[in-house]
Image (tube, rainbow, N blue to C red; front, side, top):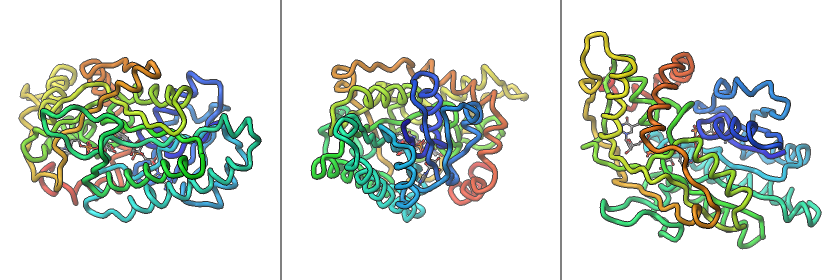
Length: 355
Ligand code: NAD
Ligand code: DAU
């Protein structure tokens, strides 16, 4: 068995689905079910005998100790986190609690479990920590992409909390010998992405006839990776990565936000045209910029590609079309995800801009 934390979120749910379809081992999904956790994202695998869900917090030592002793996993993949930059600007307490303190407590539990294993199991065990390119800070437009040796310079409370967790993982390996792996990935997109993030927000607002809120001048650049490519990269690092190393993950798909929004509008114009014949582009509205908004992220994935042989399968054009098609076909999932707490968030973040 392996234990996946945060498996009811966007990337974790895609990872579990891919894992069950391609690997022999079973998965225990430990997830607190915050506003971002959604068991409907795993409805299709919930009856699989190799899958089990446990609701709980990665920072709950008693629960995690018990689970480790019972499941006896040979690997942990840690996705659990507060993940939305804008929310960390409104209030960072939860980010520190889960991303820093929670990760620390999880490492402590895992260290206790790992140190009690026999030598063979100890050597085979892996703790893979899923992190982000945002820990490296912002790039100038003409600067080379982030490599694994780029200086950490996090700029938001979210990225600072992720940077802290990366350092705790590094220290657990360096000081205590825990067999860790860390991955730093660029922006993901694809099915089951919570509608607070740029791409699913634009698609769901567009079809709902709402405004498409672009921050600032829309020229900020992100490096987009289709979510299943991130999942294959994590599986590759888990099986072949060198202990104690970090691996950057990205698909060399840099786009500025306005280009992304235009692409989404054009695809929607083709796949689900507006009744009045106008383009969805007319719904674009420029809103106040995100404070401290990082200008550009870009990942150099050469190490992962050359050392471990991973390649992204999707390019932006193929991935974004699949994504739009998925959202159009899964309105019920979006409606459920966007109910409740999410409506308060939209009001707080956008006010009347997306009404
Ligand atoms: P998400 O917000 O969609 O999901 C996070 C999941 O973690 C949710 O299911 C939530 O319920 C769970 N969770 C939160 N706090 C928890 C806790 N204390 N204990 C147990 N479970 C908890 O996030 P995501 O976009 O799927 O990101 C997953 C991971 O990948 C995060 O660590 C994030 O930093 C990292 N990452 C994300 C991206 C991206 O573009 N989304 C890119 C690079 C790295
Ligand atoms: O780079 C990896 C990171 O990507 C992950 O670590 C984070 O968990 C994930 O949320 C994502 O962070 P971003 O801040 O890049 O993603 P977001 O979708 O929030 O924003 C993408 C870009 O779009 C960013 O430049 C801000 C802009 N944006 C976002 C929203 C929500 C808008 O212009 N309007 C919006 O309404």
